[in-house]
Length: 82
Length: 538
Image (cartoon, rainbow over all chains, first blue to last red):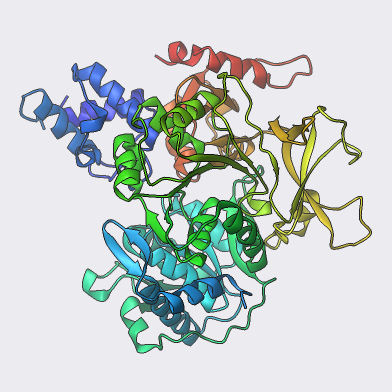
């Protein structure tokens, strides 16, 4: 399973949302509001052992499934599997 | 003379043409620019066959252009219908249909939505025309608009002679309806002007103010931001939607813009409190902090009041049907206990709050009754829906004047010994979540049309977190259908806006019933509040 698929799995299993595509702008599409965003960060922290500080978050990294996948891969120091 | 909403803005444009009116992402639109652009747009609309009273749907994300579109529509003697562009196209189509919109004004991120409405036939069936407020140089929107922004410059920047009067509709705001159909609340120029008369004086809003424009433009509250600020000659500062996700940056926005007034729904204030982003004596320029739309949890209010001792805190209350707010309560001292209830207070000028029993008799002091509103803010009713209007807007039982009406809010309230009104709860299944008014029935209607379900119920559960009330769904799939939360959310997400989608789901073998054989919603609500769904779904 590549990184984008893993992020998609978090969206569907934990957040109960199925974003249309990997490139969909989640903020513009109204998928990510403040509740969902905080839930997403918590789930990413749990699944990948990351520590994400809300005050340092760059939203550009969270705009789409692909961007989140890149962000997580970079944070783990590994190249994107996709 | 200040007969119409645009008059107050035009007067400021005459007095201070070079002063900033709207500030967004570092760009400033002056009063003179706002006046000229909205006059040109009004003339372009009228030259394009738009007639007095026509409904114009605004699909313009919050920006200076959106303010131009609102004013331009009013100046064309038309009625604007602000549309939440993040809603799914079928719901937007419903609003276009119900409002009988003849025009759409759109820009920027709304292009894909307008494209969808073009391709699914909505626009041609309803003969709706589109004005594109983007410039041609910004690229084609992907459809052929009837006019684009570039054509505005061919029209005069002088104000038109208006045909409308104060009792004409200024805008129609659509809210959730329990039967699955959104309801359009008609708001007149005079409705808004009456509130402004009281609010500008009570809050002392003046030209040196720098006010926030936080709620989306399809929220009733934004009417106060826009017209309250621009009628006073003050500056309207619009935060970008992304800031709502980042409480630290939102705090920085208030600080860096040196805002003097902040007005929002409580959930955003609660969010900022949970992440502790406000410093001691932060926002030195801030004078007033106002909230409206739902209950502000007292612990979060205490947090804010302890941090900002130089700021005045005011709770505003009122449904869309009574225009912006009908009552107010300025919290004089920081509450001592986290469970202290904050009253919705006393009626604003020109309004009256009545707490009545089933026979429409005033209840005794301290007793809970139905909350009714009477006064200058009352909407004429729901757009082209005399039945729903008659149910909610009743003749005043204490008056012989047929035009004297009271509006049944559906809220329960009591009055204390000092005449302060307290909100107690809802008499029906309407809830408030993040400031959005949501009929749980509308969500159930959407779920009941899903074939793969045997039973379904939607309840609202309170949580300890900053999110307050969350929407929860319990469902029983048909045998072998494989229905699950993700699929259900996707199905109803095609017809309902994102804020109406349940965030918690529980699959069950059958739903609990009470003695009458009805679904036991109280038990379901308690199950969700105990977090049983978290176990059930994994």
